[in-house]
Image (cartoon, rainbow, N blue to C red):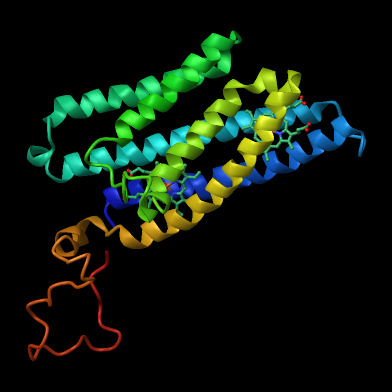
Length: 251
Ligand code: HEM
Ligand code: HEM
């Protein structure tokens, strides 16, 4: 594997090693918050604060993981063939700037208290991700919500999930205060849980489908609708198979 291939693994590894464990802890703490509020069980006063902090970390990690995936796609396409990258290095820097803008909005969302500030920074962060994701370099199964591929798209489910998490983070003080917002929070978290499962499934599927960098030129020649690849020129020749135990070139 080349350095580009290892970089492509940062996004799934972050999801597996950090995001999903934090999801487990956040869900468990959420249930304890509810039990505490309804008097079902005795819970320490720290439990709601811990739940809210875990939720904040979850949102932050998901935004960072999405930014890493997007930036990795732009970077790998640029470095593979800088001349073929539309807009060249200038556009790459602009895309990087939008990514930094999203990150700054996320940090500002954590800091501000005023409702308008929270709503604005959550929206700014999400719009930045949407802007980056709408570029032609980003693989989206379909952009038509009426087609079934749209609902199987790792990209669109990820964007929806990030939007819901950003809304939850922006609504933190209101979830504590208002019953109506708390009910909305519970509805949103059901959807968030489904989307997290969808991301685990579609992300693993995408890992199977994305070729290693040195295999890409061969894979690009395949006919994806007919599910057929050109027969390699050497196939059918009298070349003998490698002997058992012979050294095979490493990826
Ligand atoms: C999968 C994710 C999540 C689940 C399953 C979940 C679940 C819950 C549950 C069951 C409650 C208790 C509601 C009640 O008292 O009736 C709660 C409360 C709350 N949640 Fe979440 N939650 C999740 C994510 C988040 C996130 C991302 C945030 C924000 C950063 C957040 C912030 C809060 C806050 C502020 C409360 C109110 C705590 C209090 O009463 O002081 N949650 N959540
Ligand atoms: C919290 C969960 C996750 C979210 C929000 C998320 C979001 C995203 C987004 C928005 C992209 C599109 C960026 C692009 O195509 O450049 C992406 C790409 C990708 N994700 Fe995830 N993801 C999550 C979890 C996972 C998991 C668990 C895996 C694998 C085990 C995974 C594997 C991938 C792969 C391989 C790509 C690149 C696809 C390609 O280059 O066409 N993701 N992810």
